[in-house]
Length: 410
Ligand SMILES: Cc1ncc(COP(=O)(O)O)c(C=O)c1O
Image 1 (cartoon, rainbow, N blue to C red):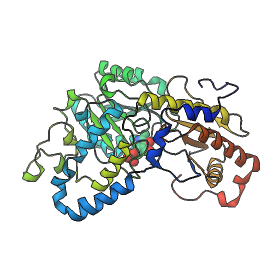
Image 2: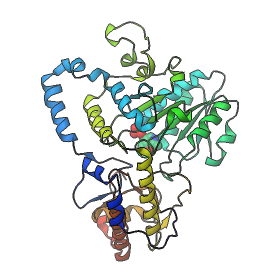
Image 3: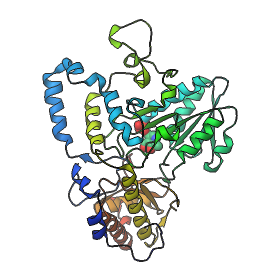
Image 4: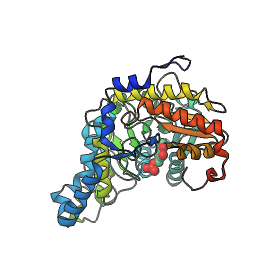
């Protein structure tokens, strides 16, 4: 499945029958007849979640009330969920904490990193990375008197000069799916005297990761995409053990205090990554994320990545034959679990495709993005999605007024 020029792709039914991960789809509740290729934006509903949430609401909240902070372990959920998530991203259990959003966590960790590198004032980023990463760094740079330097992908290692305090990179690029070599770039940052911070939003739950082994200093990632934690699910922070003692996040708040219920006048950080907590954890959202993380129980992430890669490449090869479509080249080496097709009327074409029961998303100006999470996507879905797209293009139905762009979220 590695070549886009392969002539006869193996039969999808045979591939699905031979797929050791196929049974995992039963862990999700997906509307029948729908082909959902947008788990890279919002993961699907875990099948167990409605009953779990009903129990949490009725028992933990309804009956336990305030007692549940202790009796149901609410107060420890950010660390407990971090420990459950850790093996999925190749980290030790106490290196991960679940909290806040990626944006807020970027601020906390980048701010802490700047404080660890006095005398250096540059935050180095890839030029066209996900916008929130740049927005947060712009704000932080203003506060901290730092400078944001954005360079093209190929110039990152060369830009690691003696003034760089922090290298911030998205591991799998949100638009292109290109994946950085975490071990090599973390080592390059270390050699240059800088710290590395990885945004794993498109990697956690999608790719095999080895944060501890690869020498990453810090990482953040999303709970609502591949981790299936639900809309607006809490995000996570990772901190390598060697930084736990010195970590001083600029946002210090009572849940990160060593003894929040002592109500002390001054801040004293909790041990380790717990100090990254700010306000009271959103327990209902945390319980939902817990159910999302549980969908990975027993999953070998290397096998999941390999399956997604095969799905992506099958989709890219078939879509390349469609009229009016160009396929963004996939890197030969690793890439994320997504594929971008281009069409000048991407929003309309996607709206027409969704009306046919195939859901992806669009990114300006002309990109249609499709995600292929291994836990839910079948090879047959790939073929059916390409067939539906072919029908949309052949009929020209996307020109219909009902497919005119509307709504803020694309
Ligand atoms: C790479 C990347 N970073 C950050 C975010 C935003 O994360 P949050 O909404 O949790 O701040 C996204 C959202 O799509 C993303 O793709």
